Image 1: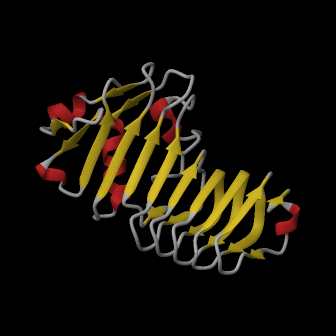
Image 2 (image 1 turned 180 degrees about the horizontal axis):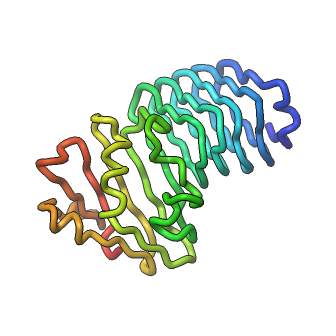
Length: 212
């Protein structure tokens, strides 16, 4: 059901069953809870509240996470973020994926102070995700330097296995010189991507779309 944000002033319980909630605006100081059959939640504006979901494959799309907490619960869940300046994200149990949309956000600058994802790599902000997608797809020309991101990515995994996938268009670029200099090995997957691994970073795998 669509919602302009005002309907969430006191929170909403979606209950069990497969539910869809679309909020065409921001959600502040409110709680959204969902049951165990998978939920599709899209908030076009900012979230400064709480989302707590149960079992099942949930899909959550947030404009900007500004505060509060999101707990996706058990199941193979997917969260798409267009900005993050504060709050807590927990993928919960299962094989969970966090997608960051980076088109036009200045590459690495998106993760620096004042950037669209400036609070993402703060300790404890994100946990419970086994997959991270950095998506530069779009009209803008974007560039990522793996050297500047590597330490943050290692911390994001929290010692657990983490696969980072980087996608984009022909006008986007990924600088992998730091990986090469540090002894990472690259192998073509035969599907338009290559994966990078290092014996020193056994829990981290980086998959980069060929041609970037």
